[in-house]
Image (cartoon, rainbow over all chains, first blue to last red):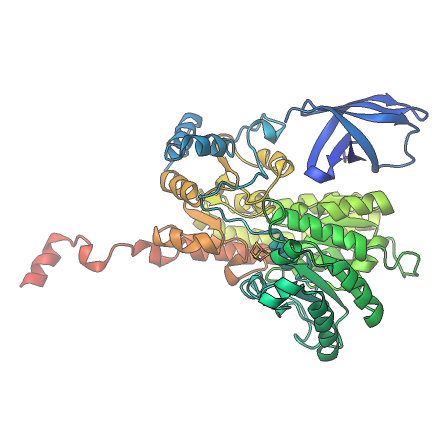
Length: 74
Length: 492
Ligand code: SF4
């Protein structure tokens, strides 16, 4: 488990940021993206996958959440 | 010399790598790449932010350098104690040319070196008592200081001193901000982690100090983050941000004060120049206070115009008009600079090797002068820096991460650039090789280079270096081939 931060970039896409390792990456897709259920598997542009417990959508971004690494290329 | 093709660059890298033993070669190969603009993700072509190989000449610094030297050092009204032996602070004292206004030693202290000067007995018995004592001394000798930071050097972490406890106690007694920073030099692979640690210390000990307190704000409050005012850079930027109608409420950290840092959460927009060293705190403020941040680039008129328009987009029409007004006002001045220097610099090729931001940020300024950057690299950049670099660089140009002294020399010998821009450690090597060189960390004792005023100085400096008559005098007079009749005259 690691703390990650999710924010919106200027183009409106979601960006993944892992402070501990200074990793920044675009999020290609998020499994659940509705107000009541938000989270699930995050697919990163690098090909990695992280999982966050589905939860209520955050009131505003950026938000820090706990995430599990499912698989990452490096 | 014309530019190398992709194959030639490839073989150049291979050639350079040949001297290494196999394991080292494998490792270094990952740090050298040929730029390919079609790649979206830099990690596909280059590895960065890894430990340097033992035995090669790296140019990196330590975490202490990143915190004491870069992030905290320029905060002028605080006293930064280099906690540990005297050398770390003394040998890096005032080397970065962070300009500030104030009377040094009375109300500003950025150029001075304060150290706890560890001796054997402090290592054996611990230095906490000494730290508490010097804080009191500081208070007596420099009563106008607005706070103290404790910048740990290597031994502090090794002997396990509790600087946090001492700092908390001192903060109560002195009624000032006292910030312990755990930036021991052995942490991380380069100064980059020092930036991060320093940012975290700001977050934990400073940023929320004035939460809930009243602040006269305007809708146009912005901050300049990650500008260290080297040679006056931040001033040269601030002047036209204010001209376009914005109010700069804080400068981080060149010519900055602790009060400005505490007030930063009241800003409407954080303008981030050095992404590498201060993105952490900007991200934090975005999450906690909802302040958006934006990376901008004030090197060279093209990038300035682009940045000003993007900054203005965050505000209402009066600022947008302000931006256009500023752009129009400086246009004739910029055109005059370019008209004067471009003919003298056109087509010249540059190789850069700098810290964490300028390897990509100054490219635009060189291009404005008709010059071309044919190789660039970061001392301590991360993948996100290279992501941002790939688009700025031409195809088939060279990228090198944490380049070793040997590699850079070989690259320069083969690529034969007209100018090399790097730091003091490289300067004399290349000058002796007969290649014009500019220090791009400290602006070679010149500057500012940011902003409109800075660009004029930048252009002049590049011309002065490149077209200096000394480069034509590389051969000593007795080895110069004289025309035949002159030789005869001399013999007669
Ligand atoms: S590595 Fe340690 S001893 Fe060396 S300058 Fe940095 S803090 Fe000082």
